[in-house]
Image 1 (cartoon, rainbow, N blue to C red):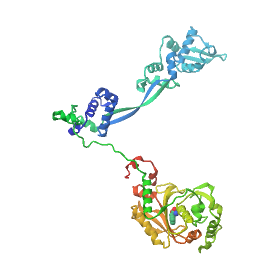
Image 2: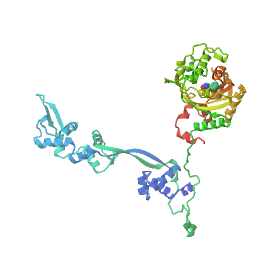
Image 3: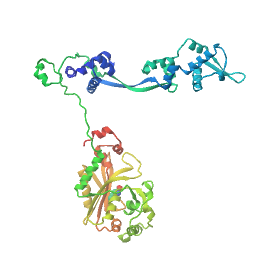
Image 4: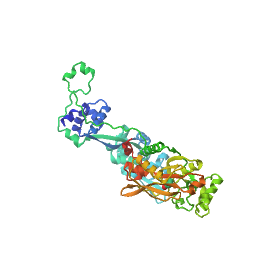
Length: 507
Ligand code: PHE
């Protein structure tokens, strides 16, 4: 403890002494009683003491009241109910007179308010007489208030506020409440009031002597040349003093991961492609030999856009139609149903990035092709800890003469290894557009979680596009990988702006 005290600065010690005295103090009080010259000194030293765990700040919002427009005017002319009653008394010196309401002359703008408050304060009584005429009598309270100049609580508060702005606790509660009920009479502003007090640890410092003596906290050439250092006291270093941590700007972890994945594919000789979010069913499904009555086309699963998109050239459309209806030149029997071009024209938010790779192949049918795409896809999924309606897919294809299933498995293993996942397994899978097909899974939280699908495009997909060689294709989820990589239990955590989590991510 002794060393700790020795390592405190002059200003820090001065603050401890003030707090020892006052227990709880505002910065202003510390400034005044502690012998400081500027607020910066006070706050600087307080912050240090707080960082060291010796003091704490308490913050409270305080309301400060002052006069508003009407209030200023009432200070000059008095409250309307007072002027009203006083006018009556001066006009009708016999205070017991019963007056006809309509006979009373008073500023028409103020008459309403004046009567409302005069009644509220029990200064007047009003009723209809036997002829149905509204009549009014003054009460003794009113006569007393006017003749003896007795001011109400509200008027006292008004008077005080005309001198200076005051905090709520300095004002009479009843008077304040009355004024608050009126419009534009008083206004308030909020101010955060800080008080500083000892923590338990700070309290312990007081068991020791705290003396503020002259000591050197900074060595200058002057200190040395003058020889002052010889018998000066030096302030001790506090090697445990906390420092402020600075966080550098960096990419969002998901962006960073996309960047790394892009790098991996580029290194393996792939080229990146990207198309639009809004696509026709033709490209997203029909070209991929997804039957037109497939559940994935359901409104429950896919986001439809209120629009249709044009189909490509007639010859291609015809070949796709044939593939679906009877297999065309693909050696298949097709789905055996009439193919509907209206269905194919419908616009949707792409449901997978396979739409990108297949479109690229349709436009570039010559081998070899190695392309990839990393982009968002959209599905009407119920959101839960492993599902999002909008997520990224990592898509890729290889088309070349000797492409085979082993190569596909090899590429996927290599990819997962390069991003740090060795523990993935491949299982037989099913997609309408690939044969054979596989699913990639990873062991997570006690069960196998699907990471994506892959396979070799069927002849019903490749032949209508005029592709000569086999195509290896895959589409892998990104967010689930990210979840594993960052140790999250909920996929949604990737998209909440948790600044603390983001800051603490390693670059
Ligand atoms: N498109 C499939 C999906 O979204 C993944 C896939 C891509 C499967 C390519 C086979 C071939 O789940």
